[in-house]
Image (cartoon, rainbow, N blue to C red; front, top):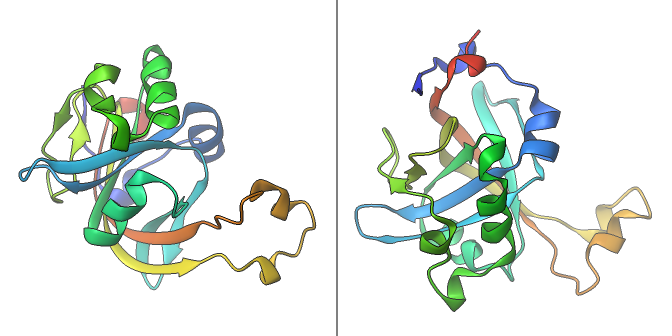
Length: 174
């Protein structure tokens, strides 16, 4: 069962969470019924400008990109391994082509502090308000292999979100 986790008491195996467990990044407005989600495994967490933050990246070719541009909040939700198939579906299907959230079997719910929804089945919910964005510049790549991730030159937009609320199961509490 999820409970409120004070941001400075939040703990996790951050690299495992991003790379192995994955997140659903969701942007939009739950109450208005306008939102989209996508599975993400690239990002960061830390502190910047005296605020706890997460950093997420979205390619401009993704349907979620328009929601990230239009709305000022987003959520990151992590799930138990039992939901791997749902996360895989939400990372490979586009919301442009149909209701992929319904197809996933997951249940969108209102978040506690932001308009972007979270999911009832999530073991961890991180609610964020956007505070900055920047586009990746290929001229700034310092490692020659990074460009290989962009065969069609659809470089990610980087969004920084101040963490305004965290809910999680006991494993995410200090």
